[in-house]
Length: 215
View 1 (cartoon, rainbow, N blue to C red):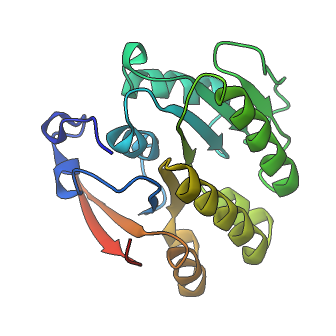
View 2: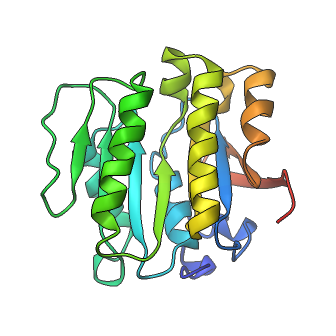
């Protein structure tokens, strides 16, 4: 799956270091240092490997839904993409808007894993009326890991990976690896098909892909 010209990336072409295509149903973990100014990397990687008609289901745990929608619009050509739906677990007590152009379900904080899963299922059902394939983006697992046990977060990631593998949608998970120990990173890396390690030095962003299991 691929619809982005690798030479046309917003960061001056650094994404050309990544594969041009991924098999349908792939899952990738984007491991970047904290803090990192680029908050749209998971959205851009999802767009890179999405087909034009795919819908996008985004779980945001640090950036609110309104900003996520604005950033999505900046990354994706709305005229050439399917709908976007957002589960906003960043806090702030914002109201849900499940019937808007970009359906949104708001939750109190990223520790509400059961409610997060139910909200993702609700919005997946909404998007499935318009799209055959739904790509999933979890903008950052780090706030979830700060609030709950690794085993609980792992179960959510496993469910999403398995779901995407069965339906053909790509799953992109972000994480700020400098906030976590080696055990956490190894556990999460073992769940996905590839880890994209991100290093930022000055104005340069480098990507290194580690394949964790064969497809």
